[in-house]
Length: 115
Image 1: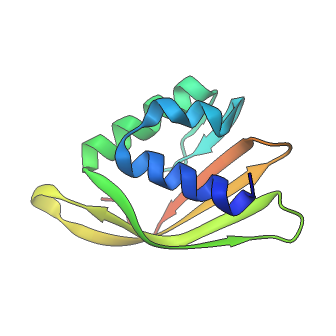
Image 2 (image 1 turned 90 degrees about the vertical axis):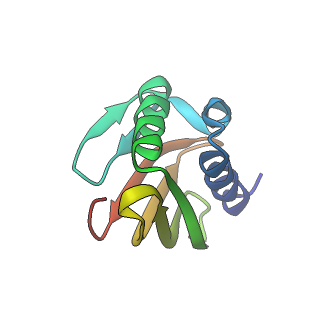
């Protein structure tokens, strides 16, 4: 699977709230860096942290442009995080993906502001 396809698969899984499928995209000891500077290690912590964050803010990723490097080990998404509910808004966001082999070893989420 190409890096671009993997990134698109992660975005699709997150937007569908299919967090169980993330294990197929990430190493067991993958790192997740959140906008507030928090870092978690391990697929279970990654899934739990993303689930809590997305559900708390009722957020989905949209308007995504996927970019990959020539080596096929790093990619990024430039898009928006759509937040619903009482504080509905659209925040510019960037997601950076890194892989060493076939699965991602790190995901970093950056937002212009926090919801």
